[in-house]
Length: 91
Image (cartoon, rainbow, N blue to C red):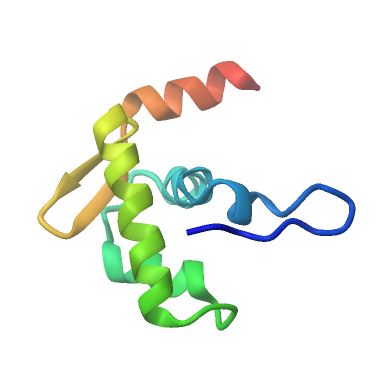
């Protein structure tokens, strides 16, 4: 999937890196377990079709799970301690 850039050469974070947007959502609601479908609805927000958002969110979550930044329990996901610690160190 390819996203278009704006005329200025930059684009919103969600267009460049859906994984970063999803991780930010999860860290903002930590320690809550959030269902993947909730992530899809929040990511789409009427700007893209639900099925397109599902593919983007599930791909981003797969990437985050593989890198250890997110943990999953069935269809629920939450930010890992490593992700939270990384965020704290970045501040």
